[in-house]
Picture 1 (cartoon, rainbow, N blue to C red):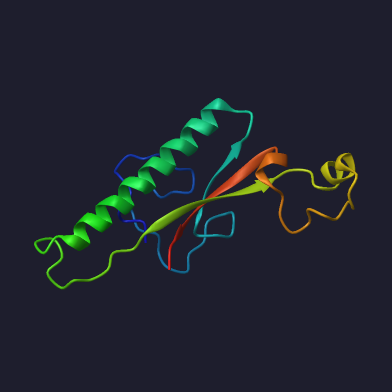
Picture 2 (picture 1 turned 120 degrees about the vertical axis):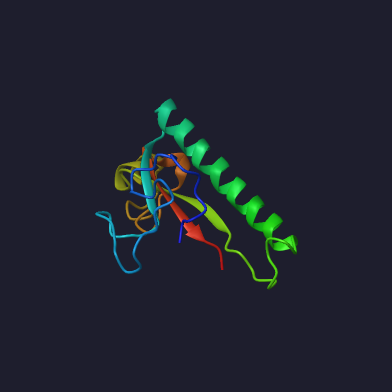
Length: 126
């Protein structure tokens, strides 16, 4: 699944050194796509998130380049593309009350602008 990640890229979930994750096996977070939790206030976490985004961008560019090359892709197959998703985490009811809206407003999703931390996921684009 993540066999395009550069060797040595440190990601908490175990997707390191180009090792494939066995299909159906989940990490401790319950999702194969979970990468890390980043705190909004932490400069180190934001730098690591930027590194992950750059790595995914390079992976996608290389996949596109490989598709266009007849030498690297003699069967004209399509290589997977990936995307990074950040999901806001933190207190929801207190944020909603401070805004003067219903306390259950952010039950489904918490905007990143109101989050204390975020979970980072890498998904394969369909």
